[in-house]
Image (cartoon, rainbow, N blue to C red):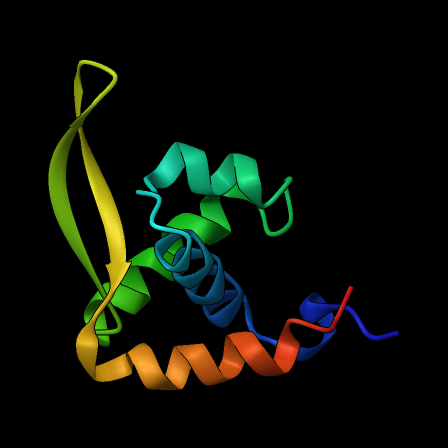
Length: 95
């Protein structure tokens, strides 16, 4: 079976992971995202991907108080939700 990392770019890996959290109703922030991706891609690569996703308008950020600290949470923008949902569904069967 093919792994998601072999099919999707790092930007789309990050994007689909943010979508996955949003789909389950969970907030996601940088450190939670990095931890959930188990070191692949690296922390610096995830940071660069987030910057590009913001630049392309694919994700948006919102400041929320999480565990007593203000944290920037991420979500997929409405314009790209259908696109990212399609990517997620197609690659969901990958290991």
